[in-house]
Each structure stands twice: as structure tokens, then as C-alpha cells.
Amino acid sequence: MAGHPREHLLSLIDRSIREAAAAGIMMQAADDAPYSGRVVEVGGKKLLNFGGCSYLGLDQRDELKEATIRAVERYGTQFSISRAYLQSPLYEKLESALDEMTDGHTLVGPSTTLSHAAALPVLVQPGDAVLVDRFAHASVHSATALLNSVPVTRLPHGDMDRLEEKIVELSKRYARVFYLVDGLYSMHGDFAPMVRIAELLASHPQLHLYVDDAHSTSWLGRRGRGWALDVLPDRSRVVVALSLNKAFSAAGGALVFPTAEARAMVRRCGGPMLFSGPIPPPMLGAALASAELHLRSDFADLQRGLAERIGLAAFIANELGLSFANEDASPIFFVRCGTFESLFPLMQSLLARGMFVCPGGFPAVAKDQSGVRFTLSIHNSEADIRAFLETLAAEMNAHGVPLRPEVPESADRVVAARRVRSSSVPPSRGSACS
Image (cartoon, rainbow, N blue to C red; front, side):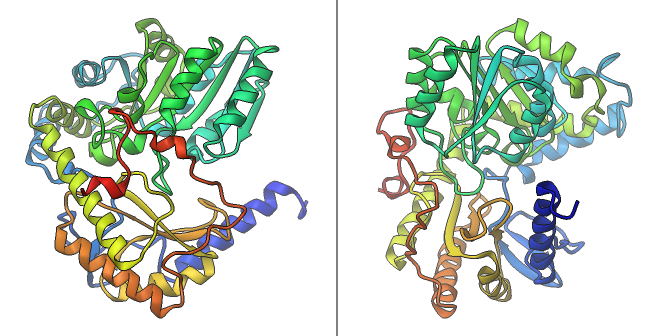
């Protein structure tokens, strides 16, 4: 039993996380202190926060806080009835606002992860085949384990030529071919090549697309509907999962369907839609307030504020000679450093100098492709961003980590098609600040 592949994998994961926790760079707890988003306190030390996902700073907006209070006063801390029998009235209000935000048919789930587990076993049927990008979120890969006899093939990250080869091959033997992908990948911050994927959807009628767009929800796209919904011209064979956490700054997930019939089928048959606990009313209230904020005419000002910070970070990094894993204009940045263990001293030095960032290591990335993963939000000032990047460059130099590392041959390459210039494609970070 000791040589069983799954047992070996669990042992590797346990060791990786355990050692990082012992080094004080993972699985830490924030101090019980007021939290503003800009600064987080850990171990009695105030740290500039470059690790959060509330990219637009909505977690500190009065509209969301006040809506949470109103909801708990009206409905209590929990509407403790299964949605299969009776749901809080806030669900319909929230889904109606999300329909307007996305121009789709929206179903709210307990989380993005559980939304995948609800949708995929209903959407994908015997006689279909599934292709999944190897860097798609772990929750997407986990949901494919629920598909029983349906064949699932992992593809190299962003390899559109390989994808089309498999579509052509599988279309001869299967009724439909589903491609599972992230809209914005959560570790390196690179976008899926949606323009190319749209072309494949148009060319291959058996192709269906399922997108986890959790990390581009809110901060990107018209009314914050995210990358995929903003770019794809034909959504008739597309389902997109959004996050109501992260930049949306509430709780839950949302599935956006092309038809009311598809939405109703997952609502009736998706396991977590029937058997998981409902979202508590306070967080439904926050989600509704967030959705209403997305529909306001001034919401785009928040998105522009974040875009300016992304461009500023790229400009300063270029001044310092610091390179990132890719050039896509997203608030997620990844600086390659090598092995996970070699990353520990650098992370500890950044903490000591008052900077909170996230280590990117195994199992999220390959063991020899670890790095510093940091994020930007509206909470970060221009001075904060400059201070952080100067500190990062200085500590990398002090620890002998190259500012412009060579990309390992085993690493997945960023596909140039991601940055095809069109009005629907975000600029590269270099042009975002011009």
C-alpha cells in the first residue's frame, strides 16, 4: 500500500504544506485586529497586504456592510431550510440582478466549487467526452471525478493546436466535446485565449465550453461580468461559473447559462443545489448589494482604478528589471523563483520587511517552478506598490534569485494568442500604463 500513487501524492502534498507552515509562510492566522484591506496584522506585525482577492475593495464598502446588517436583522443569521423545499426571498432578487449583470440565466450556488459539482454531472452526459486544461482550477478537476464513465483528457496549458486536434479526433466518436478552462488562471494571472476559443466554437458545432471565471469576476468586463462573458460573441454552447467571493466580496458562486431550460435542469438535478446548506441571509444581502453596485453607471470607475494600479506595477517592475511569468494585464502576478524550499528564505525576508504575499508552490504549481504570487487591489496605494516592488527586487538580489529568470523547459509557455490585439482583449501590462 505504501507505493500506491495516491498515497505517495498525499504524502508529497502534506510534506510541502507542513514545511511551508513550519517556515511561517503558509497556514498562518491573522491577529484579532481591525482589518481595512490595505494592512493585515500577523503575529503582532502590520503588513502591507498584497495577497487578497477583493480586487476592487468591495469588502470594505459601506453599501455591502449595511446590506449585511439589514439582512440579518430581517431574516436572522441563517434561513435554515433546504433550497429544495423553500429558499430565502433574497435568492430571487440576487439572481435577477445577476441576470441583468451578465445578460444570461443565472443560478446562485453555495460556492464556485460546489457549483462545478452541481453543474458538470448534469451538463455532461454518457456519450460525451471532456477536455480540461491542466492548469484549470483544482475544483474543476475535482468535479470531473463525478463524471463516472465519461472520458476526461488533460491538455497542456493553453495549447490551442492540441485542443483542436483532440476536438476533431473526439468528435468522430462522441456526441459532444466539452472543454473545461479557467477564464483567468489563479496562479500566474494569465487569461485563457478566448478569441481563439470563440473561433473553435464557431468551427466545431460539437464543442461546448465550461469556464471557471472566478478570478476575473467584477474587476473585468461590462458590469463586471468577467473575461469570458465579455469576449465570447456566441454563448449558446457556453456555461460560465462566476465567484461571488473574491472581487465580488460576498459569498457563493453563480452559474450563467445560455437558456432558462439549462438553468432549471441544474437547479432541479445538481446535487449541491438540493443537498448543500443555503448561503446565510447576511451574505445574500451583501451579494445583492454588490450586484446592485455592479449595475451602477459609476462602477467602471472602480475598474479603471485597478487597471491604473496594474499598469503602474508593470512600469515600476520594468524600471527595476523585474519580470513576471506573463504580460497579461491582470491583478495577479507571479515571479518565478525555482524550488519551493528555495523560496522560503525570500518569503520570510519579505514578511520581516512588512510585506504580506503568497508563496506559489507545490501542489498549486510544479515543484521546480515555485515563485512569489502577489495581487493588487484598490486598497493598495501607488506608494505601497512602489515600496513593495522595490523591496521584492532588493530581497531577490540579496537571496541570489534572478530578477529575470530563465523559464524551465518543462514549464507551460504563455501562448501568444492570449494577447491578440482587439477591443475585447485586455492590453498587456506594458501597454496598460501608457
